[in-house]
Amino acid sequence: MGMGSYAVGSFVIGYDDLKKIVPDQISAIENEKFFEDIGWGVIGQWLGWDDISYLEDAILDWCYDDDQDDEYNQKVAEEISNKYNTHVADLKNAFEKKTGLTLYFDSYDEDGGDRYDNPNDKDGCIFCVDGMVQLTPAGEKFKDIVTERRWTQYG
Image (tube, rainbow, N blue to C red):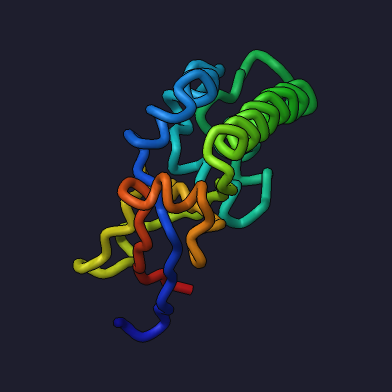
């Protein structure tokens, strides 16, 4: 592990398996305005650091309307960020309802990681699952698709 890096680990569910469990909620996020520009990577940063400014800044950077003033653009970024926030809450709630497990997010920067890392991320967004340490009945049911992973972060 390189200097300045630290070990990180979590139980992780892959994107494809997550999408099988909560397809409507994943589609709602991926069909939201500007998703193709911001993607799961920005969502992972926003949620991993619990800082919605990552999302707002990305919307402003990728989707800035030069014909409008800064105040208007900031308002649009905040409104769209609130929609994403609602979609993510719906995703987390649906996942918990269907699995009995808690979904949370982290981010992964391949450039700052290690060649042996395999956090099972989707474009830098890691879908972490809580409730797996001592397998609950719900955890036992999903133990073949939710796996514990470890990776390194720089910082």
